[in-house]
Length: 84
Image (cartoon, rainbow, N blue to C red):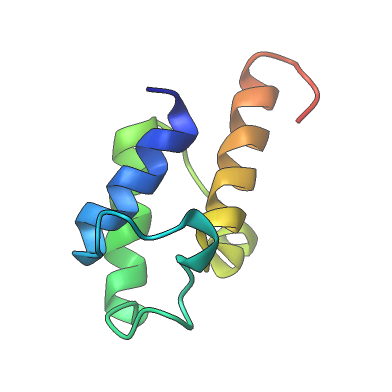
């Protein structure tokens, strides 16, 4: 399973979502449980799971599967000196 597939599974488990939920439907607006406390907990989970650190600007933008996967790709690209 690649990093992005694991992200989808992490978000589904974290928010107790239906297992068949599409990645593009995983957004803060669509998930009532994704409040400010859940955001803080999710960021901690992401940082621990993927061994990355997010700065304040990044954290403010992590409001969907798409935004999180893009941020993780950028982190991986910077670690390996690749283009995102």
